[in-house]
Length: 140
Image 1 (cartoon, rainbow, N blue to C red):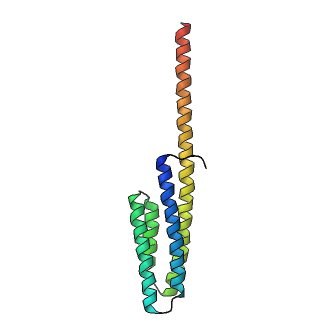
Image 2 (image 1 turned 30 degrees about the horizontal axis):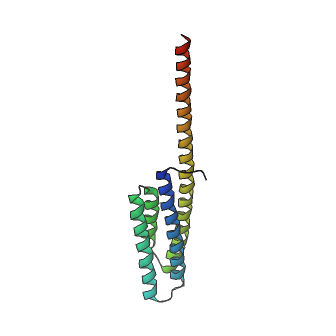
Image 3 (image 1 turned 45 degrees about the horizontal axis):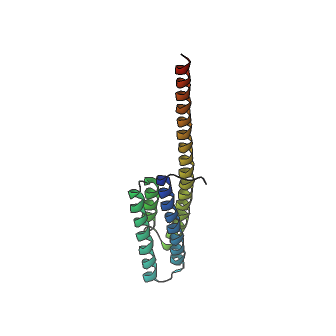
């Protein structure tokens, strides 16, 4: 990938952190699905909910509302239904969140490269206009 601006690089690094959180969430969901006792199930539910809440808060701070919304919705889904329903909801939700983050990373990189290309093109156009004006001025 081409070199990114500082802002885009910071956003991509945060999104990589979110992907690591998704991997952690996937592991927690699998442990939760295998838990047999009520105490163990509650412990995993609390960890999952806490992780999703932190992810939501950090995404809002980074101005990534769509990721925060997805994490918040998943956090609410983590507390509803039976254990089987929760496991299914969480598995599908974590996968959807991961896909959303990956698409956002790609779009961030593409948009930054496109924006940089437009700036370079505008600068080249301005330089050409200045040279043309100077040449016209000298010929008069």
